[in-house]
Every structure is written in C-alpha cells, then in structure tokens.
Image (cartoon, rainbow over all chains, first blue to last red):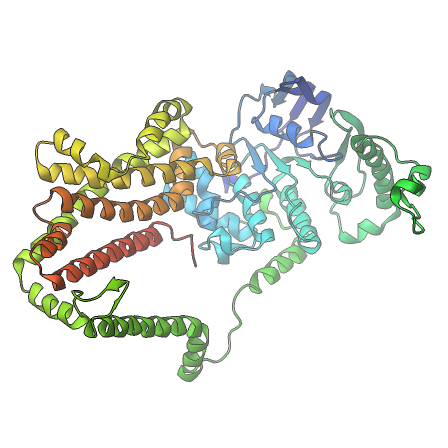
Length: 290
Length: 301
C-alpha cells in the first residue's frame, strides 16, 4: 500500500513575487501581480476571490501549465517547469477520459509511469474501494453522476501518489447536496493522506469548511488581499457551519470579497444609485423621466 | 490494509462511506421477482417504438414495390416514361438468372475488390495524415493548402488524368476510388483533432503522460467518432466514384455491368445493377458502422 502512504514532510508549495501577464494587441495585460503564497506540507489552503481575479491562473502556474512572467513557483525547493504527476490536479469540467472505464481512468497515471497491468489494476481497485466506487469500475464515465465523476477525478489524481493536490473549483458544477457530500469525502481523504492541498473556489462556505488557511484575492490584476487562518477544529462537521465562529469568519470573508467584486464590476453601487435603478415611469416615456 | 497508518479509520468516515454507498446504490435498477411473462412484457414495452418503426418500414417498402409494379404494368407515361422500365418481377427473374451466372458474380467481386483496395489505402493514408496535421502546425500549414486546392475536384474529373498516370486500367480505377474517399476521411479526422477537449490533454499531462502517450491515449480515441464519420462518408463517395469510373473506362465491375445492360438493351439488368449497387453500398456502410461500435464501446450503452 505504498501508493497512498502519508507523505510526511513533502509538498511544500512556495510562490514568490509571482506575476503573470498576457500579451494582447493593446499591450500586456496583467492577470496576477505581486503575489506570495505558500502551502506547508499537509496543509489545506484555499484561494477565494471574485471571478476573473486570476485564482485559476495562479493554480495553473503551480500545476505547470503557465509560466510566470516574474517570480518563482517551487515545490519542495524545486522550481516548477511543467506539468508532472507530482502535482495532481482536479478540474471543474470533470475531465475523465470518456473512452476509458472508471478503473482505466484511475490507472492512467500508473500506466504512464510504466507500472505493469496486474499491479496497477490492483492499485486502482483498492483506491476505488476507498472512494466507494468499486461497483462502478467497469462503467464508462458517461454513465456516472456528476458527483461520482468528480470522485473518480480525485481518485485518479491521487493514484500516482502526488506531493500536492491542486483543485480548480472542483465542485462548481455540482448541486448543493452533492457538493456537501463531496466536501466531506475530500476532507476525509486529505486527512488520511496528509497531502498538501491548494483549492480554488468562489464559494466562501466551502473555503472555510475545508481549509486551514484561506487566501483572499483582489480583483484583476489579482494579488493577495488577505490571508485568513481558519482555527475551526478537525474533524469538521456540517453542524459547525452554524457556529458563531464559522459565521464570524464567513462575514469577514464576505465583506472582503464583496469589496473586490464591486471593484471588478466597475465601482461601488451607492444607495442613491440603487434608488436610481428603481425608476417610476408613471406613464411617461423613459426619456422624459431621465 | 489496516496496518497502514494512512488508512487508519477516521471517526467521521463511517458516516461518509454510508453516504457514499447510499448514493451509489440508487443507480442500480430496482429488482423485483422476474418471470418469463414479466420479462416479455417488459421487453415489449421497451422495444415498442423500434418494432413499430420496423413494421412501418416493411410496409412502405412493399408499397414502393406495388407502385413500381403498377407503373410498369400499365406503362404509364406522365412526363416520365415507364414504357421501357422493367417491372419488379422481370428484375427478379433476371436476378435469379444472374446469381447462377459466374460473370455477374465476377462483376460484383471485382467492384468489391476495387473498393477494398481504394478505400483501405485512403484510410491508411488519410487518418494518420489527419492526426499528424491536427497535432503539428507545420505539417498542417504545409499540407492544408494543397489539399484545399485538390479537394473540390470531383474524383470523376480525375478519370482522364488517372488513365495517363497509371499503367493499367485497374490501377486507375482503384486510384479514382481512393481519391473519392480520401478527402472526406482526411477532413473529418482533422476536424476531430481540432475538437479534442484541451482539458483532457491537460489532465493527461498532469498524470505524467508524454507527447507520444498523449497522442495514443487522448488525441486518437478522442478523434475516433469523427474518424468514423469520415469513413462512412468516404465509403459513400468511394462507391459513387467507382461506379462512375467503371462506366467510363471499365471492362468489368458492377458499374460497367449496368452500363453494358443499357447498351445491350437488357432493361431488367439495368435495374438489377442499380439494386446491386444499392445493396453493396448499404452493406459496406453497415460494416463501417458496426466496426465503429466495436472500436468505441464507450459511445453508447
């Protein structure tokens, strides 16, 4: 069972002086600027922020899909040069291979590593068993529900025994009930594997419920606006989401994000402005009233 | 398992796995006591639509034959002239004669051989070329303009050129068949490559896949549905091109047979040749479709 053994002091993510910009016809556009984040070995860290703030960009740079324009991304002191099986990734669009069965999907990383068929089959079965999916090993992904697909996605990313797990809004496409179950499954697996997790989401409750620490990003160009430790005890239970501690954290994060979302939308909407939107026409044409 | 610290059971785990198994079990169909009668009733209920379609299909074919029979029996002339058109019974008579005639079978076999050679060659060249063009920009930029210039030329227009290019008549006909199926297969393969979901490629990279593995494990299977669309269309065009080429320059083949029947005033054989071509085309497209189903078991349940 060396596959899913605890990686004691591995998986230290360090992002320093990070900036990333795109070249367009109008010059370069900064997506992320001047960002430092880190994830300690075995830590669960989330990044939240308004949409378009570059949180996925940051995650993709850690995965090795994007090269930073400035700064460095290292994992255990080694610079990230490209995607690798050391950094498992789960995508919002389930991204299972439709032509492979559930088990073949989970085996994929092991196959790429050159593991022989019988060994990787056994390993995949064990992992699927842990995720409660052994009954579906021969199914094609098309026949699975969204929640099951994403469970397979997580198991597949963990199968190669990565140092870190990167998740890009993995539950964004799921309904609220499935989402909650998936959050529990994820924390459960994380606690067993002691793997470092970097989790991107726009759902504040999700970020607080899952994380040890939450980074809140500013509107585009994104940078870190605040770093909030989550002192809630583990294991986390659903009931904690009603606790005053949780609600306090939620309120704090909410106002941080709200500020940034408003900035992203092009400025604060004042009370007066809101009243202005409530135009009484009283039979006049819009032009007359204005 | 339990000896590994990583797998130590967590207090909250029982609860979670209970949730997991519960959500899993709902997918399985509900089991109830099954008898043959129940099974038959269930089968009937599930296949009612399909049986209805089959029944209507048979009825409309019969209606077609009856209309054909009446039109030829009364030699109807109403803009179109059915004076010399053979009746279904005459065609059937010439069919029973033809299946004992080795010459007729030879025509069919020769046409099939030309299709097999031309179409297989087109598949062997067009599919890899399309895959490589979809993956490597330079090759796409080099090959695409040439293919775009040649593509609109119908295969039949190549007949004189083919006769000049190839030493034997047989080779030039196979070449025409090849050309007919080549472009549909190439274009569809290329289209399939363009539509490969980039997230799947990224997922494969994250799992440690190298370029050659990504090609084999992601690009190729992802393009397969479009490749098979190309093969189906290509097979259709291959027959069109073959028949035309045989009518123009052939000495054998089912297309030649049909044209010869006209020259020899054997009108029943014209219809027989046409029906034979239709049946051959239908059979080959069915073959491709079932090959596609075998190659892509994930497509349908």
